[in-house]
Length: 172
Image 1: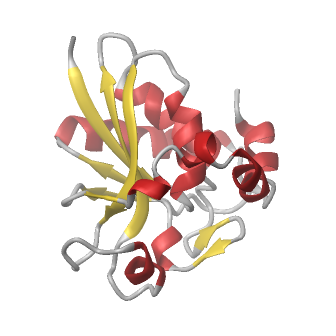
Image 2: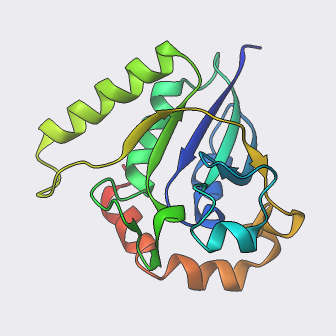
């Protein structure tokens, strides 16, 4: 097994787990916070927008089964790459789209993929997703983990806020 991690921010982390969690080769998907300047932030602190953190998911995967490039391609299908100020009904800096890379290889894959998406003509607006070096990832509180499994009705409400339609349109 070739274990690696990927970190993606694309709005509410509740909605970012399921699309990855169901893929072959995924070992775990953890909701959390990253990219900011506050150590061990709480959900309430991140929601203020003053910590610099984004809600994100840390994906541990077997690179012999699913590649980082494949994960980036899934990411483009579930997060709006043209909206720098949030995602769907979730607004604010903590919901901005970011691909956090762990090494130069991941950075190169993410940048090449972003460039290809920009050239594809799939979007009328520019691709604004940031590609940044990974910082410390803080696991979110337990009640946020596997939210789509624990609270399916509330998860469905969250998904119906625009992301669900986006995924239907862009998920291949």
